[in-house]
Length: 343
Image (tube, rainbow, N blue to C red; front, side):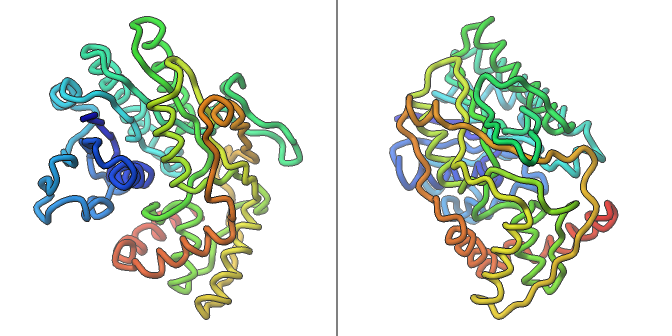
């Protein structure tokens, strides 16, 4: 039986990956390591765990702890076949105000994991972001590839770029069996409400104006989280060691269009008439991301399945509408933090 350590497995993408593996590869044992910061929520995987959060199934185990805990990480990694590394600080607005924790977690935490994986000769897959490549002009047709130069624009992106380079260095210097995936913007269930799409949805449900940064024309490359999870599984098991794979559904849409779609869904499906409020953009905000996923398509045969963006957004709206208990207690705190930032 294969055993995977999933770091950050109570967060957004990590918890979706845990559910994906249990649903599609039930013979795989999962060890979830999560520090349960504000962005981690144990209820995301509660259906796989007993109320006391001990394992209800020998194939799922939860450990509360930090990836910076050298002794803890060492004790776990020596017992697994592979590390799937999601754990990261990822919110750009927070990174601008408090960058230290981003480098402590995203760089030093990754270092702790790499050293343990090296010590026990364990397969390592590192999940990263398209933001390491910087951005392009709003009218550009450029697509980033695996060979595009790194030009991170924010403290968050810089911390992820550093961790990417570390993984490559460990592969070349120590022979670590590692791969990297850089993915576009994910959306789906269990995403923290500080993020763009969940914040817009929950604002509308609470009667708060939907906030749109800057001129609203910044473009993002969107992918459903379930497609991301399938891509990670394929790379982990069939990707070439030492390689990087870009993961994208090539759904490049400006933020104003996303909000317009959400507003239409709220009006027609939820008897809600949200209003839009423009707020100042974050410092150094990127204008456009777009990835070329040709490599993963050709080498691994992966392609996205959730390609009807409006339909998938409607499904996500329904999830947040039906799961208010999951997010409602956090809403006031999140909006207070944004108010401090003028956003």
